[in-house]
Image (tube, rainbow, N blue to C red; front, side):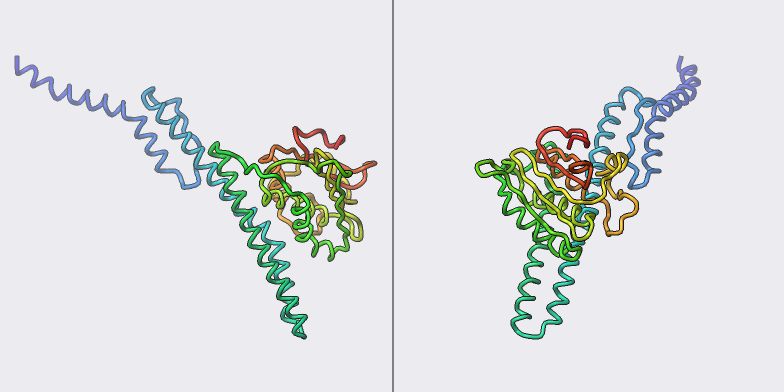
Length: 303
């Protein structure tokens, strides 16, 4: 009885080895696929050809890939936004430093140094704002709370945003104006993050000033449920309105420098505060109007 078993044992071991090798083939295939990927390849792994025992593992792995990809995308977006946002204050600091170097009298130099110091403070606040935006997006990505619930002091935010845009407006001979609701009516009462809303206002005003004809008026208007920014620029076509907010996209024929990120930043900050951004022409189809309001956006024609 032992002899037949000894004779069959090699064949049994070979069959078992082949069976185990065939059973482990999906794992080896998955290992080879993951080893061949580069660090940027975070596409999901298809679980269709995997055994039923491995499918929960692949589903969990794909979820991890998705979360890592979202985190990397937020970091890339923050880097691009920081480069866009820091461009204006750095240009202002460069101009103010030139004034400091060319100052002759002690009084003139002291005034120039004070303005330069103010510019440094604004740049520091801007960096803080961008970091705050990055943290808010990270909290949203993890399902945490959105923004602080602090009453918004719009006059203070408008003063700061217009002060940041004033050098550009003076260079292009643009007049900045702000209209408030009649006495007794609140100006868009809401709660939110003051630093982020300052970034929103500054981007809206910067775009309105940058693309308005020289020597015209840019108006910031508040109502009880919205804020509106208008200029006398050329109205955008339907296709251009549809592409607004696309990152790094800028309409053709623009003479002013830019990277196509300002509208994207405005839309994200508005969404964080439960607001909608509506783009469209001004009265009688002339100029450009941006309306930031509560609720869902309406079609541009009725903005």
